[in-house]
Amino acid sequence: MQTIDNFNFAGKKAFVRVDFNVPLDENFNITDDTRIRAALPTLKKILSDGGSVIIGSHLGRPKGVNDTFSLKHISAHVSKLLGVDVQFANDCIGEEATVKSVALQPGEVLLLENLRFYAEEEGKPRGLAEGASDEEKSVAKKAVKESQKKFTETLASYADVYVNDAFGTAHRAHASTALIADYFDADHKLFGYLMEKEVSAVEKVMNDINRPFTAIMGGSKVSSKIEIIENLLGKVDNLIITGGMTYTFTKAAGGKIGRSICEDDKLDLAADLVKKAREKGVNLVLAVDAKIADRFSNDATTDYADVDKIPDGWEGLDIGPKTEAIYADVIKASKTILWNGPTGVFEFENFTHGSRTVGEAIVEATRNGAFSLVGGGDSVACVNKFGLADGVSYVSTGGGALLEAIEGKVLPGIKAIKELRIEN
Image (cartoon, rainbow, N blue to C red; front, side, top):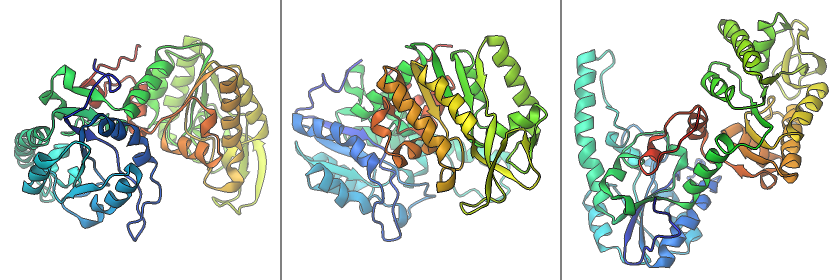
């Protein structure tokens, strides 16, 4: 497979799919430019080689053309960070985009308008009347798929080489993230630096395992993590189940959880996962105590209780000190660590201690030689909030993409260039 370091972009035009889906305030100011900065090494490599760059990205989830989601709002900031005057095309496949891409010279950059202004990018029909019949839906979907081919061909026609540096969208079989790669031969489609790092980190944590391997799975719903947990049960030595999921497992075991969050229709599922862990010899680590509150608020009255003896009218919003010690001991003894999901409502300052303790334990283990991968929006927010990001091996930028890779799913955006194999 061609790599970005080995490829010489001199005299070539590169279509680079990035993830510039950045948050904007009411005045269209970027409030967090992490995703833009993450793509800079790839863009600068192409320019320094003497190539030119055509940037494609989405912003938000528009249902057609919508100025609120226009990439023109970020063009000036991209120019500032790159140190190059970035041209902007007010469409991604219209005449202006074609003319500007043809005229693009070495060292120049063109930013295309939001790819998702077109239904063809995602391949999903829009504008169907409420209550449309199955036949109408089928006809609309077929029409979009047919026009998607032309849309993809147009994007591909702008460039000599395709570079995918958008791991955050790698789990989507969209025109610019997967389908476009078919229009380039094996020597002219490659990953950008960010994508290379993401793929390498996932492969290492899932396939190149130094043991003990510990996965920490948080989140509020067992149902949203079921496939991940089942796949991990065939790989890990220790599986820490934490966050809101704790109380579903606790209630399934007969515990009293007050009014803590719980999926009552998933109690049998939780019990089955406990059984599977036992059968596979996995050390399933659950909370033994909780920091409880009399209401869902940072200013609530708080106390501590055994996780299976939470009084009526109270709810668990974080793990307790006994659980913190148990988790930390397991993590510090590990050589491979995957963290997805906080231990509690870390957005409230009074319920951050458990997540901070987990993060600090991961940093200590990493310092002692472990490989640690942190992924998923809330976990990333945790390590950034606590200033721990530099202390772990890798912080993934891809939420949904990372989770699907951990589930063992094939990611279309990666398969289009290289097969990512997660061994089961």
